[in-house]
Length: 150
Image (cartoon, rainbow, N blue to C red; front, side, top):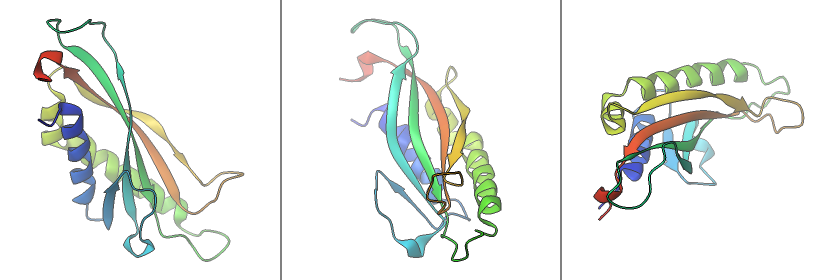
């Protein structure tokens, strides 16, 4: 049986894979082909319980899934990184729109679930590689019923 967490992570990957301006999407991959950029990488991240429940036979618990979603563009060859910031901004907007409007994902999260934008972080800052990478922080909340894990 595939649990709801796994199903949600697979759906996030599918949504990113289906985007027109993303060449490829990978899950839990540390290295990727530079010929397939811009690309997205989904790392499983963490999950936290939001509501208190104990053991089997208890009501379902609201949990918060915190995957790490990266968007990586083709590194620029010139020192001024012309257009890199703008490209990252456009891709961020498209990723957010795709994930927030996907009805299959919404169905998996359920009535009590939601997607929440927490912010983003780029490597376009002092002391960073400045290659054109952005981590988009999202929280996906859904109900976890321990009795369904049998």
